Length: 249
Ligand SMILES: Nc1ncnc2c1ncn2[C@@H]1O[C@H](COP(=O)(O)OP(=O)(O)O)[C@@H](O)[C@H]1O
Ligand SMILES: CC(=O)N[C@@H](CCC(=O)OP(=O)(O)O)C(=O)O
Image (cartoon, rainbow, N blue to C red):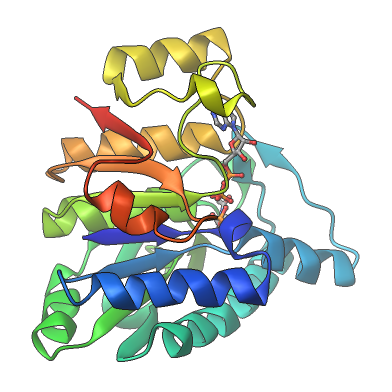
């Protein structure tokens, strides 16, 4: 299974360690590949350098200067997470062409769209009993770094490995009336997702997440769930289909 682990569910060290422990526990039952972002860490490092952040439809406009900071911040986080998870190898998308990408839209700068995943490297690590922990910086056609939204990167990895995916975040799933957790949808079809984006009840950072879930299914993932990483046991409940929002074709 692929676990996408992102910014909001890693805001404190305690939370990060709790999720890492859940990932380590899940590994006793199944193979796990972690793909991570780190929005809040990137945000902090950019702010410390006086570099402003602008998002369009959930994607960070990334200048070459911002790209350097994104890569530095995510590389450090990658090592911390792989240490937290244990028996893991931390890799960035630039290692062994793990994530290949092209420029998504020149107006967004160095933002990438994934064009290929080196699944053989992941299979080799898994075969050696190690958990891959993948940071979402890809290699572009010119060999330079491209900033890929971590949900998008994780969806592409799930598709390439034909494995299910759980996107961990700071909400219990997709809410029909955000922010009311009682309105969580247990299932959403592609048509409902597209309708939700068009009608505006799926917004902001949830847009790349639901699109990545659909993309993962299109690329061959058997299931895609969006669930909370904020409570103990949430990951295994989501893996069993007892929590979160399951996106279906
Ligand atoms: N319909 C919705 N249901 C739940 N969350 C939503 C919805 N629409 C927008 N959101 C927002 O999406 C956020 C999750 O996306 P994001 O902040 O990018 O998460 P992460 O950093 O975990 O990847 C939620 O915290 C919430 O603010
Ligand atoms: C292009 C783009 O938006 N890239 C993201 C990559 C990190 C990410 O996605 O982190 P979370 O999963 O924590 O949100 C960014 O720069 O924030």
